Length: 335
Image (cartoon, rainbow, N blue to C red; front, top):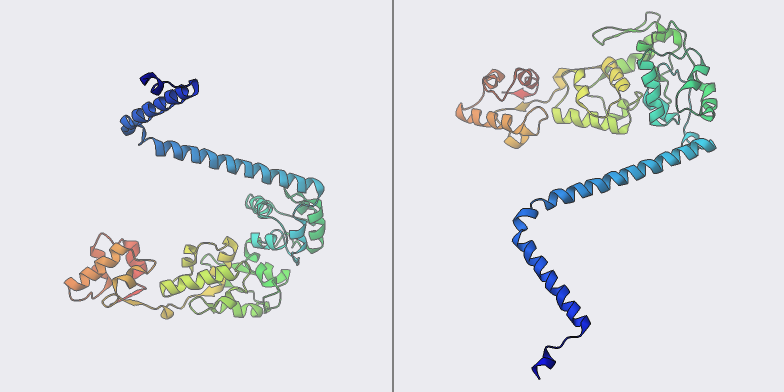
């Protein structure tokens, strides 16, 4: 009688064996958990990394195939190029922003700048056709607008003023003679030509970096709305600039545009808004770009201990403040 209760069919016996094996494996896994659990996250991370690399590789292949198909059909970036507006330009002085605005892709603009950085010069329009990545259709479209100045032109100086030909600029364009006669001093101060043609630069050279607004900044070539906003926002965080060289601390400014800003703009240090080190809160102090949390804390603790700080020299006694910190903070702290 009891054998009837212990009788199992072949399928049931297989299920019992499989279940028993699973239970044993689970039990073994629990006993050895201390060994394999710490390693699991690392393994999963490696797997995720491999999957990400495979995805990037597939995307790269897809993009390369797309690029090749466009190049073979002569239709590469045609919609992008046709939507751009061309103006007269000199390939020896135009910056990367110019080339991109003319319909060239960023990597082509990079090739041109790399060629120029190695001493390469475009002496005639046909030389521009040899730029790597530039299609014949793009060259033919741009050829009528290529205006190369004479070999006597000082390109390092003329590039500063190439932005004044932009249609947004409310000043008359400079001719090649004016550009050739213009030089830049080592101190980045503008020395204007003596032939009277410099009058149309007076508005730019009178720009004061601590007063200028975003509208005026955008009139300079290579400075768009985003860059202009970054300059003004960083100026507000600082309280004002004491040197044009501080513009280097702002990310996203094209080198050519930075050179123009450094040469064409002036600094009035009387416009700097200082922070009262004896009254400002810890939050106010540490929000300044030149002050860390620990430096701000030193200021707060020191003014409590000494019933006020008399001059910035007292901060130099602490290791948190280097000599460079003191030199630039003297423009922004009041006592």
